[in-house]
Amino acid sequence: MMVVRLVVALDLGTTYSGYAFSASSDPLTIVSNVWNSGSGQLMSSKSPTCVLLHNDMFHSFGYDAENKYVQVIDDEDRNDWRLFRRFKMVLHKQATVSRSTTTIADTRGDYMEAFPIFTMALEYLKKSALEHIKKQRGEVSMENVTFVITVPAIWDDNAKQFMREAATEAGIDTSKLKFALEPEAASIWCESHSAEASIALAGTGTRYMVVDLGGGTADISVHERNEDGTLRKYTELVVVIGVERMLMPSSLNCYKTCLVEKYCMHGREITKMIIWNS
Image 1 (cartoon, rainbow, N blue to C red):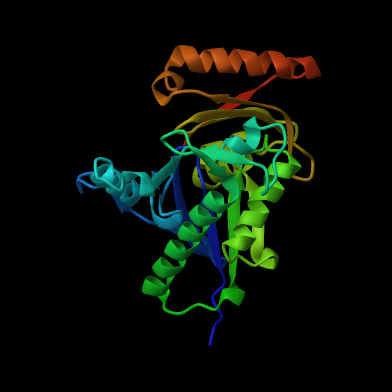
Image 2 (cartoon, helix red, strand yellow):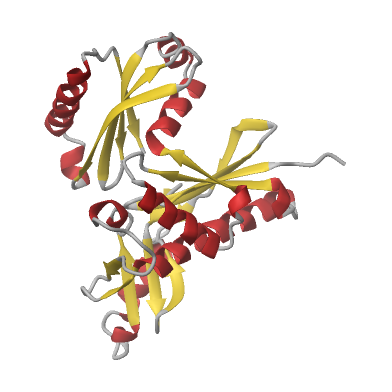
């Protein structure tokens, strides 16, 4: 019997989150989930990054969390419910990050430790992905599953360690866990799914800008292709801004100008630009 090895990607985003998986033997045949909003009219491969607690215990995630919170917001026991959203970038904003000291606020402004919230979010995504795999492929041994979590390239080692510990707490074996830098993942995806991009970015010394437009951040980085095919990242700019402003051409030009000025300090010239709308 042929052993099927799977790669499961978990994307805990600033505003939206999701997962996808594929077999290592056929990596470009990718399966992702489709979530429905409460109205049932919106279908998306991402779900809001929201964690809802009831009496400080996990209740729900994503659209389910938002919809339930709306239902109970006017109830007498509303203070028993706590909704946390858009908490990812706390790992970048705070000067020191640790599982015991890093805190985040709920929608009412009350604080608690961030570590359990990150753990709950990752555990939900992990369980959802594994249930999806079971429905599609049947039982799969965890020995044959590798998890990849995407993280911003701008995160320092403390933030990455925090995420690693949260993933471990969520039940992911560290020997089966890998991190992927978001700009590099975007670059590789573009090369894999566009013959034109693959040719344009293949040459040694090719320099290009990756613009990752997420729901709450604009992550912009400059890469150069090394002789061995690997990527060298020169610099990166992360802008936290509302999506309605971030998608305006004037805003994008402003960010591009800032990064080009920083990049040109290396005496280099940008030759390509990739827009990645996540």
